[in-house]
Length: 179
Length: 253
Image (cartoon, rainbow over all chains, first blue to last red; front, side, top):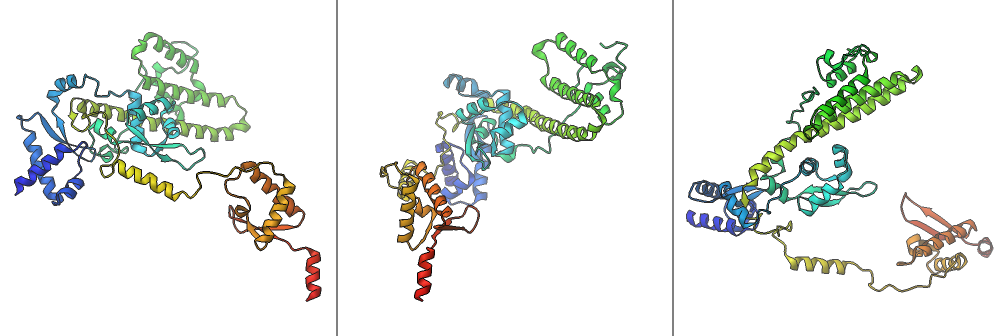
């Protein structure tokens, strides 16, 4: 009986076109959360063995199949090497500010960065890393931005809370010296 | 480096960075008038000329510029008359706080770039099934499809009571006409009307202005009075009875 549910969960993960959350699997199967967790854990152990080319990764609040890094050269050929975005320093900086302060306006981002961010924001919007989440109720009604699930997928994060808190980050002032 | 007799304290003598010089001045450990900013800037410019521009650390340069600009600000304040001292100290502290606060905030995110770049590198060679099954990864929840979208549009259209076709009205109205119109409206509706009731729906902006002016004129003439119970609340207009009519009524009674 357990084997049957293992196969069902595997089928669900295989069929899903986005990370499948525990909640969703529980809702579909009617199993208990702990049972589903155990099934996924057993599958993760199974797929981590060398005989498989893929594994189950926990990302963006769910579970999905991912191809092991050693097979990436062949996958790159399949997608003509252009499927993975490599973000610029400015884009990462802007994304970090949005991720930690979301929802946030363009002006607030620019206040932290000290430079104009309109083009970076436009590119991030186009590539789907951020989205507009309403307008702030202040004069001018500026747009509020927040990160999307694509951001979590790109950096392999389970959720925003997976990021280190700003308090943990030690500011190393005075280390950079001009010699 | 700096070996000019004019400069009493140089970076070399301080044996530390400009930031430390800045901190010493801030903590009043060093007298500001003993520092030659010109020499520090010359030293900085020579650093820029010597170093290969491709490998200049922008963070070092940024922190240097902030430290030196603060020193310049303090030093320039020394030139101002003493009566201004108190005010300057306040503004100085405010700008200092603003600049330092922003830079510290910015530095926090600078350190995050490293973390994000590492995570990006880790994830670079991992291909997710959902992410690379095409570029059609949408944010639409799994629970909804296009039929739900159509139903939502239909319900919005049903909710909107405004007629799709708006009656075209002649814009040629003036204040006198409008005043008569308002008086008639008030008479018909028991002498009491709110502003939104007076202004017809879908009317032009100019007509609203004319209505407002007409109402003001009626108030001026003492024919109409108004009440507004709260800020931004509905304005209630009511018709004042004529004195002659009032006299007649009282005499009849």
